[in-house]
Image (tube, rainbow, N blue to C red; front, side, top):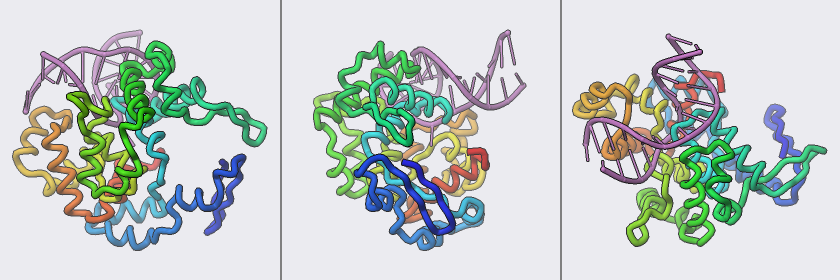
Length: 264
DNA sequence: TAGCAGGAAAATC
DNA sequence: GATTTTCCTGCT
């Protein structure tokens, strides 16, 4: 699909009947009242100025499988690299398609990645992420995660569902609190999910010290590298949810942009 | 629970 | 050109 914005108009060209206006509206969440959401999260100067600066930034509603697989690859990598890994995986395992005279490949199905060899996956530059991606694909292919069910649950239970064990093994290896929150926010409609990556952690330490209790500040100051324990993660994430409310995830997104600067 | 490994590439020095 | 960092999780 190719999308262009002209003022209030969104012009889309597509090669597939699947990408109709219903899909586009859903994907970009166009039926939601963005101003209402932005008003709701603008509870302090920091986020209010980020909202002003990046006004119009939206969360998209991604396909859960694609979202999950992409964020499994995102561990310990930067954005250019993640883009590269995802493209490599699509090129190698996706279905061939054509759009506006140009050939490309779709995001692979869970089956395609589940039956790929780890060695082959590594050739896409995935490194140690390769086995995780394969295992996650297998779980999804085998129906061990039901995204529609996850989406229907309240935030906390939905999160549990993604992080759960099955006979002592994680259903989704390589998926921890951060990746789970990303999947919940970007593809399962949990707008209160507040994923904490290194950028957000830095923003919080710098501008929202009140969200962190003094014990945690001491711990963070001591190791200096902003590595959050699961306990710290949960604590900060819960504080952020309490502070920003129903649309905490939108606040996260605007803060992320502000933290990175305009270069994205 | 703090500390480390894990692989490769980008960012920084 | 070498070193540090990177939208992190799992193991010890």
